[in-house]
Every structure is written in C-alpha cells, then in structure tokens.
Amino acid sequence: MILGTAGHIDHGKTSLVKALTGIETDRLPEEKRRGITIELGFAPLHLDGLEPIGVVDVPGHEAFVRTMLAGATGVDLALLVVAADEGIMPQTREHLAILNLLGVRGGVVALTKSDLVEADWIALVEEEVRVAISGGALDGAPIVRCSARTGDGIAALKSALITAANAVPARAADDLFRMPIDRAFSVKGTGTVVTGTIWSGELAAEDQVVLLPAGTEARVRGVERHGEAAARAVAGARTAVALGGVDRAEIDVRGTVVVRAGDPWVTTRVLRADVALLENAPAVGQRTKVRFHLGTADVAARIVAVGGPLRAGSRVPVRVVLDAPVVARAGDRFVVRISSPAATIGGGVVTDPAPVGRRVRPWAEVGASDEQRFALLLADAGGQGVAIASLPVRLGRPSSSTLALLSRLKRSVVVAGERCFDPAVAKSVETRCMAAIRAAHELHPLEPGLPVQSLRSSLRVAPELVDLIVERLAESSKISVADGRAARAGWLAGGGEADSRRTAAVLALLTAAGIQPPSVDELSVIHGNEVFGVLKLLARRGDVIAVATDRYFTKAAVDDLIGKTATALAEQRTMTASQLREALGVTRKYLIPFLEYCDRQGITVRRGDDRLLGKPARHES
Image (cartoon, rainbow, N blue to C red; front, side, top):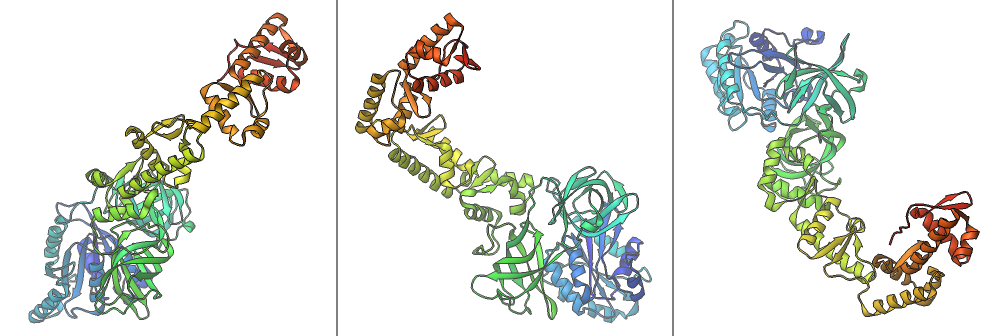
C-alpha cells in the first residue's frame, strides 16, 4: 500500500514523515540546504497489524508540482499536511485538486505545528480544512492535531492511518504487471537499478521485462521491497528492481514503465478519455497545448472535444493527442496542466488507451460502464475485432475479471479464435460471404467453389472471423466446404445446360484424339477461353489427367500408355526415350510430357538418358 503526502511548501511534510517512520526523506544537499523537498522521497511506515506501507513524500513548492504528480499517481491513501499556524494555502488547494482528479480513495489530514498556536486558532483552521476537503477525495477524513517537533498527536495520527488503510480494497493479484519508474541509478556490483511503485501485478527475479515506450528488453536480477531483498514484489509496494541487459544511460526516467515481456501493453500517442476542467480553469480549445501527466510521464498534448472548446466546470468525452508515446490503460487517471501561468486546470480518466487511428471521434457520453465500453470497442474495431489478450488493457480490468465479463456477455459478443467481434459486424460478414460465393459461381460456373483463402482475402476482415462464419454456414447447410473451397449448398460445377454441352464436346474431342490429344491452346481456339475451366472440371471428375500444364490426356489414354510402358520396360529393363517412342507409337511431342509425368509419379525412374521401371504403375487422377 502507498501513502502519499500532500500540502503546501514548508508545512512540515518531510518532518512529519520522519516522525512517523524515523527516516529523513530529503536526500539531496540542496534539499537540506533550502529546507524543502525537490525530488520524491520514500520511506517505509510500520503500523500495527499491517504490512509495511510505502510513504511517498512529495514537494509542495509550485515549481515542483510536476514531481508531486509523479509521486501522487498510484497512491492508495493521502496524508494531507496543513500547518496550523498558516492554514490552507495555494498549493494545499492545488494538491487537493490533484488528489481529487487522481481518484485517491481516502486518507487523513495532519494539522501540523499545532504546538505553535492557541486552541481557538486551531479550531478555526480545522474548520477551514473541513470545508476545503468537503466533497472531494478526503471528504470526511479525520483531522489529527499533531507536532513533529514535540511528538504530540503522532500516536493518534498512526491510529487514524491504520483505520484508513484497513478501509482500502486490496489490489487484484492476477493483474498484468506495471511499474512506472521514478528513479534509475547504477550500483557497483549490481548494475542498473530502477525504483517505482508497482501499480498492478507481481514481479520476481529472473522475469523478463520490457521498458516502454523505448521497448528495451531486460532481465530481473533481483527485487527489493523497502530496502530488503524479496522473492517477489506485489502491487502497491515501493520496489527497487535490479536489471540485467540494460545500461542506466538507456533509461529515460520520466514516463518509462516496466512491464512483463509478452503482456499486451502498448504505447500510444492517441487515446480517448473523459476530461473534467476545474471551476476556475481557462477554456481549452483544439489547438491549446497542455501538459498531460500520467504516472511519471509528462507530455505535451492537445485535447479535442466535439462541439468546441472545453469550459470550466465541464466534464466531456474527448480525444487526447500526445506529442510523445505513453503507456496507458483504461481507468488510468491523469492530470492536465498549463504552462503559462503554471497551473493545474483539470484531469480525467482514460476510456480507450489504444483507439484505431489518430483522428478517432470521442465517444458520445461520459461515464460509460465496462459493458458499454466493450460494445463501443467492438463496434469501433469492425471486421478486425479486438484481441481477447488485449482486453485487460483496453478495459482496465484484471485478467480473471475480463474473462468473467466476456463469459457474461457471450450472447452479445462473437468470439472467433482469440478475437471477439460485434455481432452486427459478424452478421454483415456472413451476408458478404454468401454474396462472394454466389458471385464466384456466376463468374466461374465450372469451378467447384470459391477457395476459402480467396474469401479471406476479398472480405478484408480478420481471418478468424471468416473461418467462423464459413463453419457456421456449413453447419446450417447453407454452404458446403470441400478441398478448401466453399460452394452454395447443392452447387454442381458445370451443371448448366451450355456448360454440360461444352464439357461433353471437349471430352469427346480428347477421347477421339487418344494418345495424341491437342494442347490447351489448340482446344481454346475451338471452344474459347472457358476450355481451361472445362479441363479442370473433367480432371476433378477423373475423366482426364493433366500430364503437363498445357496437355490433358483422357484417363483411358494414360492407362493405355502406362500399360505399354510397363510391358516394354519389364522386357528390356532399361530403354531410351527413342526406344520408348517406338514401343508406344507416339511422336516426341507427346512422348516427352508423358515420360516426365511418369517420372513424377514414380512409374519410371530416369538414369541419364535411360529409364527404368519404378514402382507398380499408379497415377493421380
């Protein structure tokens, strides 16, 4: 579990963390010299009956709000620190707004420096704090008077934190692993080490990981939790990971996320989201540049809403176009800031982390349920469908929860292979499939059907969907499938009157020609270009045999020639082509294609210029 501090500069956040944990989180010389927190600080907090809680101490100064955002994203509880001698200050309100935008689920307010003021003043400040937190993430949170200098109230503060921590739901154990990096450094004898808060999933030594968005691959050499070696680290834990196969110089800390290799995480420059602007925010148009903060990522972005600029106090569905790739998941919360004047103006929730195309339209309404977003994803994907493996990222649910949702919606989802589709899309593909088969019959009446591979190519949808549709059509007896070809039920190639006459005429001509049949080109002069289809039909029926690509013999003629060849070779053992020509009584034009056919079938074996009898006479029909 992660506890994040929040509050105005110099209100005593770091001192309070030291009083709670015994650890000084200000590490940098400049931090110690100036007495303020510049970088994130971390410390384990040990409370009775709980696993160690990771405390993230964040800066309070306006210049370091970006760092505060990197620490606050992913926290489970907030510890809002307000100095009793000053009360609510500008950064207090901005930090509160950020906690609200990030969906922090609860916390405690520490009224520090209580030893410096009178009781009646503390009561006024306490009421001011209660009004400030009303209606937000800390609405109803306990307000504890305390002093890091004297130790008064620290025990009560710990007790309040225990109660708040016990109310936080546990994170799913079967989720995909993800850890945004907030530090990277080298340790002699260990190598590259990165630290962060694990947002989801688990990690163990020897796991293979990828650093996104760069795509750098690495191996986990070791894991530490709160400074101690561990077999594995789990969601909600502050973790240090030693990486093998990657140099510190290759890691850009801001925005880099560690994920397990093979998991379906993707980087994106475009996402759909529901965005809310604060009540005092300026309007945000399509060309307004803002800063987009998600985890440790800080990226320039544009926000596009249907119907014009976003207005203060509004909450609308939008498209977010990013200047650099980020790793996002449905349900992720982000914060939007402007640079001049520097201020937090709003935030939102990712609803679709990987839409198709850069100019996707925002969805029609905010606050869509998982079931509604699933239906929208399927409709948006069309004939390509959505990979089932991608759903934990696209829907923002753990793997088991995603599969349960898919099972619950099985009547409104078509599953083909490892992809799922909108039923309306599947129905459309079925209609197009039947139309393509009918068109193939009209265009090629002598063919037994349309190759399924051609059907896959022509429909331009996911092959898995075509295969499922073909299977369903065959099961319902609307089509038949044989030898990789799909045909309308009851279809008979060449069954038309004109086709039957042409087929009979070609077979009669070949039968009359015997062992010296005309070539395909010669036949086409007599019967037109359709003759090739006729020959293929006759070959499928077994009436003729393609001895060569341009020469078809009747089966009877081939049987006759094979019989004579076998007899001649049985007597002579070996014979040249010239000797076989005399024995068979055919010219070289017909002999050579026939002998090459016999070689391919193993009826004869060629040794130089001679041929021997091969296996017993057998030929393809």
